[in-house]
Length: 319
Image (cartoon, one colour):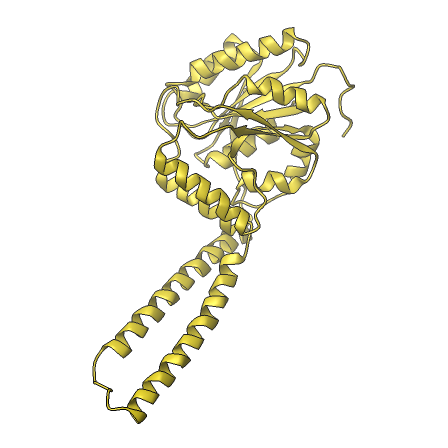
């Protein structure tokens, strides 16, 4: 890919995945359009830059509102998926459909600071293919979410997963980075782990995250836990190695307990018939086995969904 001439305006696309966002979408579109106008006036982006609003199978008036935004401003494009495929799939659909030389992904809830996009464009024009939006602090989160997020990032780093700390899905990708991302064909997507694997020149832009403008979070605890599990099982086999190590340790402990029981039985008079020496090992071994089966099942489920090679999504309509 040949990058645009240095100093020439960049053709920018801003991708916004939407799922039941009727309460916030009009304000989001207004703010993003205002940002485009500002960047066009400054000469940093082309007049044919665009906004791509991706409807991820919404059940409210989201697609109707996207149609209205397109009628008002031709720069606002609408991509309607045939059904709800999840945030990561909707995001990929928008990234792969957008036509810009540089593509920014941002959530519709207005928690990410849109002003940081100008700094991302500046870094792109300085030669970076990937620009991560990184939060300065997590004061907008609850105590539990803040602690769990920090622990999760540390866990992924400990497991050897390449991930940018305090970064979600607010980022800029060059056209070259998008084409590289297309070569990853897995169905179980975790973009926060995939993008660093591309390996092109990258940098970060710091920003402050705000409260959600309107509506409800589309990432309840259940979806957050599922995404967290994808982050671990899609990028490292460490849990499987833990199972192997646990198996060895439990084997040694079992042999040691057997030798101790035999010693007490043969050389002392302390052996009292009871359930302790039998029940405790049974529960311990049963717990280890169930945990191991659960982890193995998670990996087998991943293999099952990947082996079927089903399409990630279908586009119902493109405005």
